[in-house]
Amino acid sequence: MWFQRFLESGTAVADPTPAVEEALPLADLAPPTEAGARDVRRRLIASGASPALVSRIVTAVVASGKRGAFAFDVAARAIEEDFRPSASPRRDGTTRVIAFVGPTGAGGTTSLAKLGRRMARSGRSVVFASLDPAGAATLTGIAWGFDERRHPEIPCVAIRTAAEIDELIDTWHGVDAILLDLPGVSPANTERLAHLERILGAVGKRVALDTYLVLPATTSARALGRAANAFCAFDPRGAVITKLDETSEPTAALEQCQSNGLPVTFFSNGQDLENDFLRPNPRHFSDLMLRGRIA
Image (cartoon, rainbow, N blue to C red; front, side):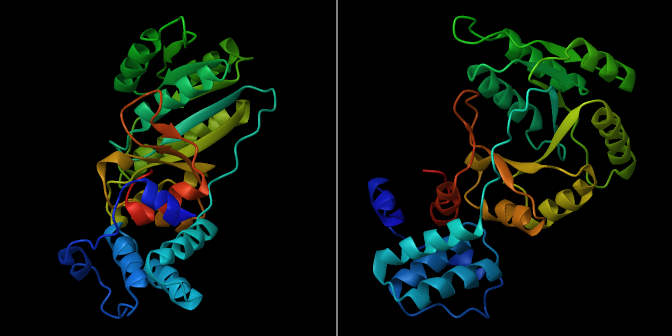
């Protein structure tokens, strides 16, 4: 049960500071009288949950009749039923282009590097490609920094034009995946967004394309909404939630994905290129909302 995992973590059930709750628009949501339900409510608020989500989960807890710390088991189950990760993409034997798009500073290049190392460890053949000069330098450093006794070398190609993308696809036809790094774009820069959309549209006509939206968990709910709406034209297959280690309020990013019907495909949870890139499972969602972190 979630409560057993909670106890094993050595973390006590504690109220957040009153300022967190008072700063949120929850005046219309009267705190429940039972201590366990109150603790659930306060933790959800501390994680950045919206009033609607707080109300939904707390209502489920109160309706269950569970009291004390066992209220967390009910809350965890309700969260895990409400928030689902995306299914793992299936290998079909064809070369796929995997592109990460998102706002400036979202952590897309680092996340793409993590994905490349994860895929290489599993024995898949991959190539890094970047339309961003800074990203190309970062990816090249990572590719050549491999310990070849444990990891295969990952080629890295800097590209500048659509013609070079065509050449890239022709040259590396047969690899499992071309991991395409794109420059971050402000959601307000409609001209740049349209340019990247045209590039990916051309790629999608040549080869199977999977696009993922990178959203940093450190961003405000309003900024997350702007980014999700701006990049919806790219028809992303799923979302990559980054910078989870830099915030105690990750729930806004999870709710934004749910609101946009965008399944969460990856979590980036730190700077370690080997270990801090996760395929989410339902338990991760309840940990993030009730602990503020992945256990």
